[in-house]
Image (tube, rainbow, N blue to C red):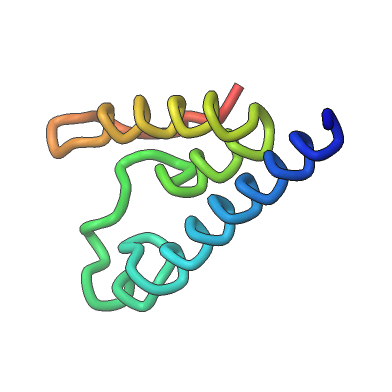
Length: 88
């Protein structure tokens, strides 16, 4: 039963990671084709919010990774300084 739960968690993790990569390659103002059209509309942070969330899910799992990504999105707004903000 424990192996089934681990496999299920891994599958959910892979789905979330796939969705983030799909977003980055299609709709993202930092990574996708829109970056060429709107060069100043990207994330104020490095790595971008989507990449930060991707790394957080890889490192901490779905729950904590999504929570860290959500908190990062709240910090990313037009009045934010932004800058280098790596995942610790």
